[in-house]
Amino acid sequence: MTKSDQDIMVQAEAITKNFQLYANQTEKLKSTFLGNQSETNFWALRGLSFEVKRGEVIGIVGTNGSGKSTLLNILSGVIPQTSGKLKLNGSIGVVAINEGLNWELTGRENIRIKQLMMGKSNKEITAVMPSIIDFAELGEFIDQPVKDYSNGMRAKLGFSIVTHNNPDILIIDEALSVGDSNFSKKALGKIREFIAENKTIFFVSHDLDQVREFTTKVMWVQYGEMRAFGPTQAVADEYQKFTQDLDKLDEANRDKYVEKQKQGQQIFTLEQLQDRLVQQGKNFDQARNLTAIRSFEGFSAISLYSTLIIIFGLMAIVIYFYLTKGQQP
Ligand SMILES: Nc1ncnc2c1ncn2[C@@H]1O[C@H](COP(=O)(O)OP(=O)(O)OP(=O)(O)O)[C@@H](O)[C@H]1O
Image 1: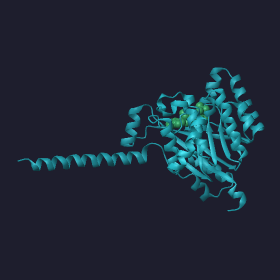
Image 2: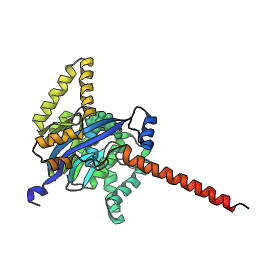
Image 3: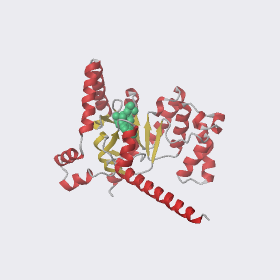
Image 4: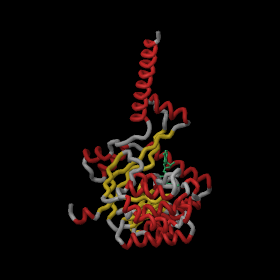
């Protein structure tokens, strides 16, 4: 690996995410157990490609439902992409509202579990515990179950745990908007420290001023597509103009426009993406590889799995009755 390769922290190629939408729960169950194809395909991401280098602070913008959280969930490994290639060069930490805390456990227990998951020893955990508790400002609440916390308190705890883990890549999803203003200032101070340490940061926020202040580049994701990715001020201006123009439309026209974009997300196909990749210079095999399905939410794997469970369950019941009947005098 050359020096510049090592500096690439995230490399994403043609990432897609398909969700299957069902008219109701019955249709979903039918699809899961019987394999009925009654669902509607919805492509939350339609082939995103980008590279992010060490030390870059990336703001991700886009209107509601545009695919920002889906992208972050794929980056952090919470959900798999449907197709496409993703390479991460380093550890990853996610700060998001309600992210990853066990609500039945206390704050202190959550800290311990998260640290154990990072491979820390009990001695190391005991050493770092006071600093995490102190930063989270939870006082005696630290020994209460997390389910009794407010959203702001959970955000503080999550932020403190993740930043103390010192990840190479930090993902912040709207988490700064829920704490009180004092905590937000402190959290932003911590983010500044991370920036000074040349960490890579993804920052999702609807607060464009915050995005302009903190990020070096902006990724504008809209209706599952990458509209722009480049220097902060230029892309933020472009996105702001888009939202202003959208706001100028009357409600009927705005709904019509959004509906048309959403339809585009339903009729999208991986074959279309494959053609686009070829037009962009990939050879046929590369394009076919990049558009091969890696995971499909919904039917295939689950229905096969559940069908097998049902068959084995029925066999176990039959064998049980057969054996117990045989033992009767
Ligand atoms: N598990 C799911 N099943 C079905 N559809 C989903 C699922 N998760 C997300 N979606 C859909 O995918 C699209 C993108 O959602 P996502 O949460 O990524 O948007 P977002 O840009 O983060 O929105 P917001 O700004 O409102 O947080 C939305 O239309 C959403 O309804």
